Image (tube, rainbow over all chains, first blue to last red):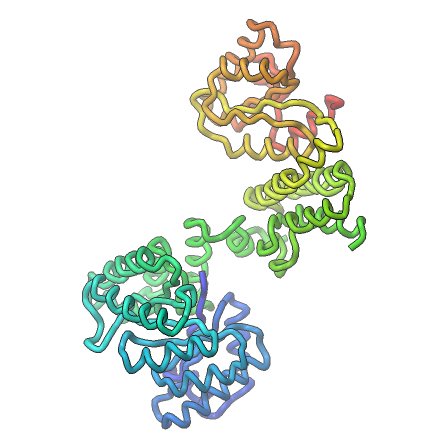
Length: 266
Length: 227
């Protein structure tokens, strides 16, 4: 499982001041904590909601540089603004990066897909288009096809694409969980080379015992073919779900990760 | 890398359970470095004596693994990973050993008895025996007594290993021993048995030559038979 650590997100009240004030030490400390906990990527979302697009470009550049100079870990650059994404990619200076994200809308695709090619970056593609989030697996799959067409056109290999089937809270719609799982399975069936990713914690929004619900959903999604999750690697319940899930679906050769986590320490 | 360094590196990677370069090992941070397959190919290229490679890279390492397993430091997947390394190494070395005219320690027929589908333990035994220099003929699982006897005779095997994981199927081993007697080849083959419900006492009861607790013990037992 590819674990994309979600903490560095400026919409969180504890992170916002770190980004706004460019608190280098705090940012590095957090990134190190995420890396140590088992994150494969660190998500970087510097959108505080208060600055201009130019501020965000500066903040992204700063955050990417700051983490990249100190820690050798791939970054997942998280913004809806193509200019901010590009600033982050540039600041990575050819080190591994993931673009998070493009929608299946022409105005996004024509800007963002060529960036994935130019910077040889991984690309998260949301299964939604101009008309919003489709309500059926077929509709979401159609959005993925549109992204896939653009990737072919721009020479971005499917193995670099992470389709996000989209996760909506089950509290507001009890069939949302199943809809995501079914979409996930259809994506894996149609695009066997492509990867899949979900923003895990959405599923439990507004409910108690979120970690347990997230863990259960994560393992169901792993069975449906999930490759990556944007999640909290500092949460022990979730990490246990990752390691046990991987072991159960044959994605942990020789049980190395499982053993390392659970075997008796001398 | 000189010969000694290479031998030590292969032995280390067998213990770490790294078959190919991208594998993780028991310890962290080894992925990407050459593993048993790559190193063994290099050893063959450098014309290092195949027998020496078996003895110094495989046999000794697996003893180490067995010890770690007994102490509870290694889990079943760790042991399987190391056994897989031995299998991969033997695939590379097999033709060399034959060409060098190195004789095997003997032909070993291996089977899980009729009615029993369990074969994980038996497979590990098979890999360990190959690593220890035996020629292994694995008949698989759910093998009827008459076929076991037939294959033992046909292959002129000096050893027969029987496995059963169920109390209901372990009795089948007795049938095999009786059938060997009836066919007049009981004294030509040593019968070793193993599997969770079996024991030393049971082995004696049914007239087998030895009970083996696990794959490592099996190799030990054979060594004590002076083979």
